Length: 223
Ligand SMILES: Cc1cc2nc3c(=O)[nH]c(=O)nc-3n(C[C@H](O)[C@H](O)[C@H](O)COP(=O)(O)OP(=O)(O)OC[C@H]3O[C@@H](n4cnc5c(N)ncnc54)[C@H](O)[C@@H]3O)c2cc1C
View 1 (cartoon, rainbow, N blue to C red):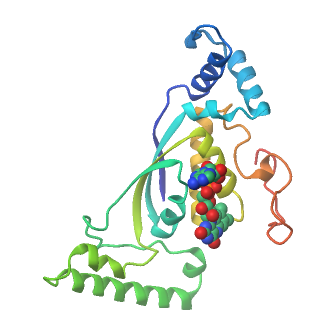
View 2 (view 1 turned 90 degrees about the horizontal axis):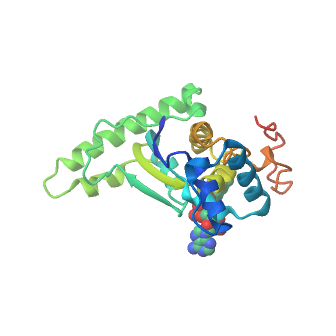
């Protein structure tokens, strides 16, 4: 998996604080004149008051490579984001190299069965797409959830906060959780105030999950 932050609002903390200050100023304030302390003070107030719409002015674009279709199927359930994903109608997936979960990799028997099936899938895909009357968009019906894909995703900081709460949690599936944790690290470097307490809910306080779903291992504060 490769996760890269390829674009973002310049100075996201400053941009969000500037938007917030505009709400309480007669004229639009001079963005560049805001001190670091002022930005911190405004954003901390915003977090306390729940006036979270101002962080929507900061947006972030990630290039995500070599993840499974299992992951992207979960990712695109997050509706307040923009996506562009590699097409299986236009891109020939003949050389598909599946994502293999560790539990399968670590078991000789499971890995053998998995590899056998992947070989069969690959052969069938190639055979189908070589048939004159079967287009690529139909041959792809045999491709598995493990198929690698690439996707570009853009989310604003408010949606990212929500996304991190759900997907950095230990209840989230391992692959999307790994990606969410990497995204969190990248945005924290660019917007340390906005994302200071972002992550699974247990980073900020008690776990909101019921006893049945509590993982029993809350993430350490700032961990
Ligand atoms: C651990 C885990 C297990 C899951 N298991 C399943 C499962 O078994 N089956 C399944 O189908 N899904 C499952 N999901 C996906 C889940 O149900 C959500 O679809 C996904 O997490 C997107 O979250 P969301 O809808 O809150 O957020 P987003 O789409 O990111 O939206 C953000 C927020 O905007 C608001 N919003 C967005 N759209 C609307 C709208 N149309 N109306 C009103 N408010 C809106 C809501 O407040 C929402 O929380 C699972 C997710 C997790 C994290």
